[in-house]
Length: 337
Image (cartoon, rainbow, N blue to C red; front, side, top):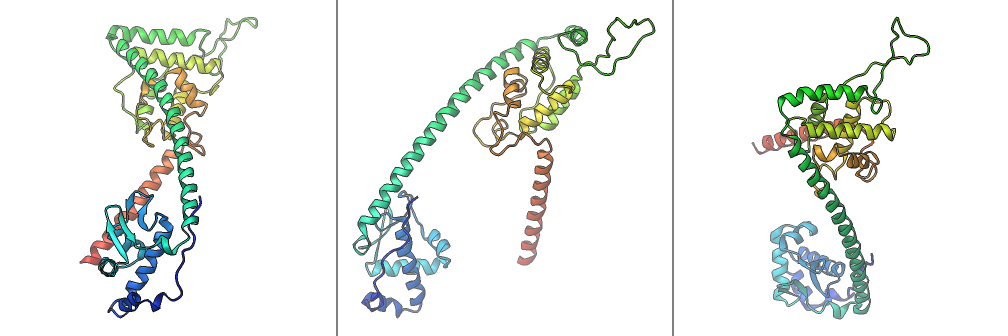
């Protein structure tokens, strides 16, 4: 970025009649310091003598008092004095220094303005490209969310009898060869060496999965229960993970727990960065979305999903900052008393 690093000042500026009259005022020295700082700020702004930010927002009296480290009455007195002597003009665009460009290197300042203009143009083009890519990603996610919502509505009509049947279905699926979570095998008395050893099977703890989601994904919408449609999608997800050897050797509850932590660590999926706020439980358990989460597509820059204990550390840091703020506020109240 090309910036103005110096401005011209006449060596005989203190012989000027206006400067002598200002210096004779009670706060003359302070006013002259503010005048030199205004000249330097005008060079930094490089807006043909105007005091404004990015050629759009003019500096107010309060802003000048802050950056000059002067009191507001001192700054206003100085501005009134400069205006009276015709050294500045107050316009709608902001404070304008009379004849500023006449005493500066106008050609050099114009070249720098042009370089900054081209730089900002390239920056806007890059931002537009990024926004277009994000819009495409959000469009794909919206279609996934709509499809998931339809499945949730369809599955919510399960009756209590169907819920009882579902428990048997879970055990049958887990005992099948397609999805098998094994523990230590046990031999029976009538087992022969040629026969395969039977393995213990374990069912899915749906209450644990629901509890883990509510406890971990605190930034996402909560759920009241696991419908038949949701359980079917979870089984499909687990079968896909097993086929791809993702989180191999972990129980269903451990797999979902790890997946929920990756989501909570992502500023994008939780909506903390303000770019997307449509992530839900049903979106997470969609097998396509879950694989993207595990592959790190929604990690924070520099890595964020790889640390399951990040939430604990963040909560600890937040509590520490809150305690410090409360202590500071008590100190201020006591000081006022």
